[in-house]
Image (cartoon, rainbow, N blue to C red; front, side, top):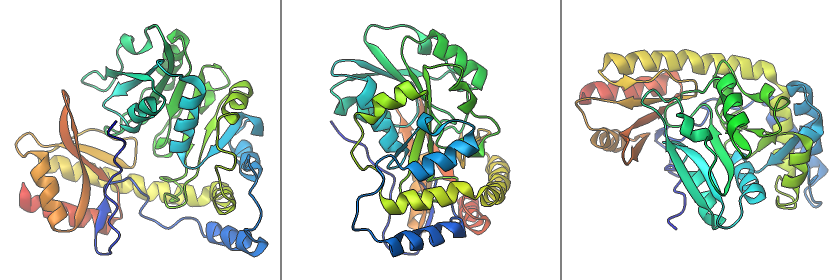
Length: 338
């Protein structure tokens, strides 16, 4: 197997980094205070294996009981746990195409098969996505999707789940930037699991914390296969403080959405086909200028965006919504190129 290749993470300073969908703003000040308090308590003992403080705080905000929540070392850990739980060797994992490339890697690690169901041209899903297939044990649905930033409406997601012969994990890593989400579907269908990340909207990509919401009998099965202490004491404290500061989230989200609108309009004015995004990035294709040379020229000027090429679908540039100054620098360089 080839293995998953993360986006470029330069360790030297001086780059404008718009390639891995990080939040450009610092996290809530409450995060620093929580980490300092955790350090004062000491790190010589193991952390709470179930991250109970976070589960209780998140349960209050989400309107569920704590036993509906399982925490992980980023939402990638949650995806790994779900795959371990439901997909055995030789079984089938279904995912849309194009979408998050890690999904296919997780199937390979399990010795399982994966089936990619192409999106329609407008990034809706064909009925084939819900079709029963021998050995199908789990389906992943990133919503909003990457790289497109498009969403499948909750009512459509519920209809898909009702038709599928297996659980459906809705990967909502970017849902805080959208107008609607699928959390309310979890109580309506035991087949639906919703995973979330604190990397994007809460600006904690460097900390690694995510969680999944599902009915308790599914959570109990997932607990069996997770690592013993998959969340450390500092990440539990920081994540609990971050999710509690909803005022910070609202303010930061508003800034990112305003910049996203400005980026979208500017890219279209430059001749790009830019899909309306419900995430903290945009997907951009120019009908006359190939994407890879644009990516390489931006990189030469120390501006990183994500070049992505999907065989049978095409390529393009995924640009993270950074600060206004970062986006202005990227746009200024693109104007010189196109």
